[in-house]
Amino acid sequence: MASLPGQASSARVMRDSWEKGQVATRTYREYLARLVRPGMKILHAGCGWDKSEISRQFKDTCSVVGVDLDPRVQSLFHSEFHLGSLDAIPFAAQTFDVIFSEYVFEHLADPLAALREMRRVLKPNGVILVLTPNYYSYKTIAARLTPQWFHVMVGRHRYGRGHEQDMYPTLFRCNTRRRFEQLARAADLSVRSLQYITNGPTWFQKIPGVFELFHVFHQTIRNARLAAPLRCAIMAELAVDGSAGTS
Image (tube, rainbow, N blue to C red; front, side):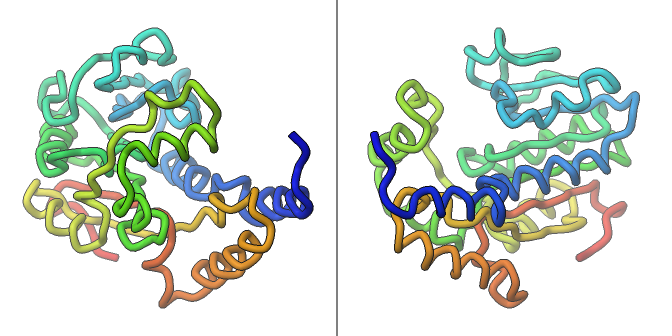
């Protein structure tokens, strides 16, 4: 199918200004690389098949473990894999130095149970890093207001057929600063740092005119500190209560 006028320009803007919509993932990957040191035992919580190669970068220097509820992952994950839920992680207490989870918390029915389990299997000086959509982003608002069948349709349009099984229902029960702080305290954790990140107008790349308007909007929320809570994603670092600082 031929591209509409303006789509080539939109693709260039997404590449040059928004890293093809991967700003949050790149920021998360780099932040994680600063937390992980060779020889650590690390847990990729809700790992999927690591399509963004988050934990793959550590497979030769660390003991990498993945946990996920999807049995399809077992044959696809690059390292040790365990089928299981994040509210019942199949490991002994104080096993992991770093636990990390990207784009999973928005799907959890009980994020507090997951945080308590992560706290249980985390070593005393360990850290947890979470990347998840921001509750107040217009993208999340749209997701909250539309049914699951619509999400599947949009996913098929954006990613192609065959990805329908990856469009898991979203609940957004731990997707604000306040909620992270509340649940962290309840799980005997503290929020060491939290930042908002925007990926740019990923939804509108194929809609010239609309794309340009949302490009300006995303530039504004990226550059204006007061508008940060409107950005696409939240990245939060948690630590055992008493060892964490504030931000």
